[in-house]
Amino acid sequence: MMSQRKQIAIVGTGLIGGSLALRLHEKKLSSHLIGVDNDEKHAEKAIAMELVDEILPLEEAIQRSEVIILAIPVDAIKRELSGILDRIDGQIVIDLGSTKQQLIESVKNHRNRGRYVAAHPMWGTEYSGPESALREAFTAKAVVICDPDACDADALVWTRHMFEKIGMRILDMEAEAHDLHAAYVSHISHVTSFALANTVLEKEKEDNAIFNMASGGFESTVRLAKSNPLMWLPIFLHNRVNVLDVLNEHIGQLEKFRDALYSGDESKLIHWMENANRIRRIVG
Amino acid sequence: MMSQRKQIAIVGTGLIGGSLALRLHEKKLSSHLIGVDNDEKHAEKAIAMELVDEILPLEEAIQRSEVIILAIPVDAIKRELSGILDRIDGQIVIDLGSTKQQLIESVKNHRNRGRYVAAHPMWGTEYSGPESALREAFTAKAVVICDPDACDADALVWTRHMFEKIGMRILDMEAEAHDLHAAYVSHISHVTSFALANTVLEKEKEDNAIFNMASGGFESTVRLAKSNPLMWLPIFLHNRVNVLDVLNEHIGQLEKFRDALYSGDESKLIHWMENANRIRRIVG
Image: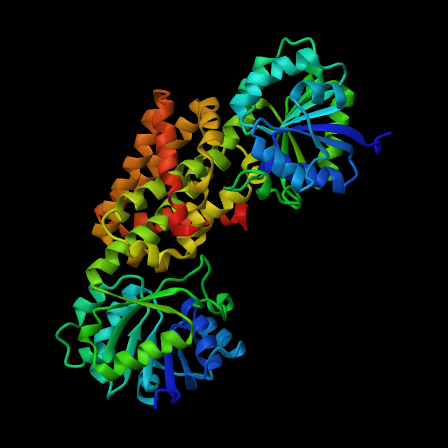
C-alpha cells in the first residue's frame, strides 16, 4: 500500500517543484505528474524537460490528483491554500514554503485542515525556473514538518514516506520554532548577501577594479544576492518579526567588530573571530 | 634565460606557500625548493608531502636562494621584510600578503627596494596549513602587483613570468587602490561571515535545531568564518581605515533593509533586492 504510486499535481514547476518532480518520478512515487504553472514559459519548459507529464489548470489538477504539492512563493501559497482545501475530496495537500506560521494559521479552522501537511525542505539555490531543477536537490537534506499533530494520520504517513524515499531527514517542529530557526539559518544569510552585493555595487560605480579582483571567498558570500526578489519579499514579510530580531543581533555583531577595530583592541578582535570559528561544529 | 629554473625559498609553507610550491615545481619554475617555517609541525608536514625539497632556517634560506617568497601573515611580513632586504645579494623578494600599503611603505627608502615585488594573489580558503595546499589554487585567478615602477626590471620580469606560468591574470595597481578594493572584494566578506557565525552561535546556545537545519545557502555565507584569526587580525589592522569605511557602508545597507522591512515598504524592499541582483555581472 505504501509503495502505491500516486497521481501528483505540482503547483509551481520552478526550482523546487521541478527538482521534486524529477525525484518523485525517479523514486517511483508518482504514477502521473501534473504540472500547474501560471507562467506559460515555465509550463512549456517543464513539459519540454519532461519534468511533468502534462500541464493542467489548477482546477482540473485538483480533481485529477491524489496529492497536491505547492511549490510557489509563500504569498501565493497563502492566497491559494484555503481555496484548494475547499475543493479537495480526500487529496493530500503539501506546501513547501520557507515560512510556516502564517500559512498554518490561515487554515487552522478549515474543515479539511487534516489533509494539509506543512513542510519546508531545507534546500534551494540562487536560481529559479524549471531549468534550474536538480535531481539530487533534496538528497541528505533536512525537511521540517510543522505541527504534524494537526494532520490526518494517512496524509502524514504518506508525506513522510515521500520525503524519506527521496532521501531527506525529517524534523518535526512547531511552526513558531521553525520560523525562528529559519530566520537564523536561511533568511538572514539572504539579507547579508543582498546587503553585501549592494555595498560592493555602490562602490563599483566609481571603479571597475572590483570585477577583476573578485574571487572565491567573495563569490561564496555574495551568491545568494542573485536570488529572486519575488520569492524572497513574501518570505521576509511573513517572517518579519524574526528576521528583524536576527538582523538586529547581526548588526550588533558587526558593530562589536567595528568598535574593536576602531579602538585597535586586538584581544577583543581575536576573541570575536575565535568565537566565530566554532561554526565548524555546524558546517564542518 | 626566462625559462631558467631558480632556487626558490618559500617562507611559510601553509595554504598559500604550499599551494605555490606545488605549482612552482609542476611548472618547472624551480630547480630547488627551500621551505622556511617557524611551526615545526608545518615544516615536517611540508617535507612529508614533498611540497618543498628541504627545510632551512631563514638565514641559510636567504643565502641559498635566488628568489625568496613570503607567504606568512602580513604582520610577520612587515616584521621580516626590511631585515631580509638588508641581507640579500641580488635575490628577488616577493610577498603574497593581503594588504600592501603598510608593507611597501615600510621599505620605501631601503637601498634594496628594487629587489622587492609586492603581490597579492586573489585566492584563499578558510583552511590553513600545508595539508590545505591545492595544486590548482591559483589557476585563472587574478594577482595584483602593486607599484611595479618601484621594482628593478629583472625582478619584475621574472615575477610576472612566474605568475603567468602558473596561470594567473596579472593586474597592476597602486598600493592604495589595492587596499581599498581588497576591503570590498575580500576583507568585508570575512567580516560579515565571522559576524553571521557569531549571530547564529549566540542563538544556538538556546537551541540545537539550527545544527540540523543548516543547509547550502547558510554554509556558503558562513564558511569564511572558519578562517584563521591570526592571519586575519593583522589584515584588518593593516587595512583598518578601508575596512571601517566599507563596514559602515555595509551596516548602512543592512539598516536600509531593516527600516524598509520594519515599515513594510514592499517597493523599497523589491528595489533593494533587484539592485543586489546586478551582482550577477560580477560573479556570473
